[in-house]
Amino acid sequence: MPPGRRRRGSMSRTLAAALFLARRANLAHTAFNGRIRRRGIKNKMDFEAFFATKLDSLHEEGRYRVFAELERRAGAFPAAARYVGPEARDVTVWCSNDYLGMGQHPKVLAAMHEALDRCGAGAGGTRNISGTNHYHVLLERELADLHGKEGALIFTSGYVSNWTTLSTLGASIPGVVIFSDALNHASMIEGVRHSRAEKRIWKHNDVKDLERQLALLPASTPKIVAFESVYSMDGDIAPLREIVEVAEKYGALTYLDEVHAVGMYGPRGGGIAEREGLMDRIDIIEGTLGKAFGVIGGYITGSARLIDFVRSYASGFIFTTALPPAVAAGAIASIRHLKVSQMERMRHRERVAAVRSRLDAIGIPYMPNPSHIVPVMVGDAAKCKWLSDILLDEHGIYVQPINYPTVPRKTERLRITPTPLHTDADIDRLVSALSGLWSQCALARAVA
Ligand code: PLP
Image (cartoon, rainbow, N blue to C red; front, side, top):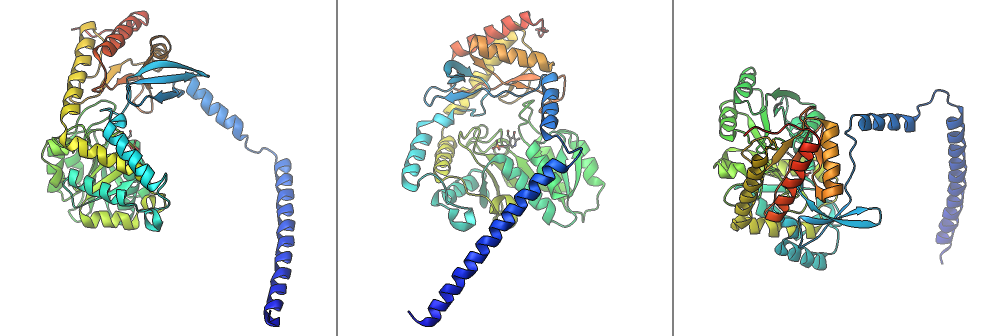
């Protein structure tokens, strides 16, 4: 070995040893300081007591959330096993957002198995750094086609797609003002908030109020109108055509969340905008792969430039690992199936109507709406939780209570979501359990 090499080697060994000793001394010093700091500070924050107080207040208001530990049974949905300790009991799920049961569809499962065997478990990176899989590209093509757009971009959830897109647009477009419907989902609200763009809240589904507020700003101010199609808690549907017309009149970019509508409405499952023939007049259509499509993930669709812009600037897209290829494969299979099959949508509508007419017959009050969601109104957080507990423990019926802040106080409810897979016998059991509990709890019945 040449002498020069040996010298460099011995120098680096010395350096390494010195660094090691310095690091050890530094760590010891930091640990020592940490102990001193923790022991020495008076009136320090008691974090555990703070958490306990906050949790106690949720308990007191009757809105502390308890998970039902379920095991969905592929092939048997809406039946599931519910774990109470080591014991598993049978339950029927009545509050799933797997609205059409696609989470167990044989085509979806087969596609996922195949992709899992071909590609393995994870994507292996962000989309930019080795994580773009062929299945991601196919999925984005499928979604662009579903909504009649030039491009699509997938995210790890619907929440992330809303948050990321709105925050990126709001933060990037100089002077933009975002007009947000008063009942928009938390993911949109947080996205707008994070963008720090100026926002204006318009009254829920009130096109006159939207127009009034749009008219207050000069034409040169860039504007975004953000809204949903199906609002998931009340099940009402936005007047899309009027909103689009007003937005066009004032030159605003339109951002539509179709999370509770994709797969469910429109001849190919493109959502309410497809059903109303409005997809080409809406700039950005956002959706989820986690509800009617039965898998997980979120997306936006729009012009090629807009998609490229979000792809290139959005932190929530750039700096996170891509969806597993098997998930993308399952979503592709689900979307393709629902583009051509009407069976699930037709049966779903029939089941929703069946549940409503049975509730009518016994006077259980629910909020009427033109969608698939059946909000059974209780109007009291503690009673709502009690009803849900008894349904689960004594009747094997799982319906989650919906309390504040998801809905306003005094409008607490049981949000029932029938699926095409609920049988007549399932409906019989649900209705008779509700009827008994309504009497027991002295809750008001609707007058026919
Ligand atoms: N948008 C709306 C209107 C929602 O209700 C939800 C979730 O329930 C989301 C977005 C988030 O979608 P995901 O569950 O895919 O994160």
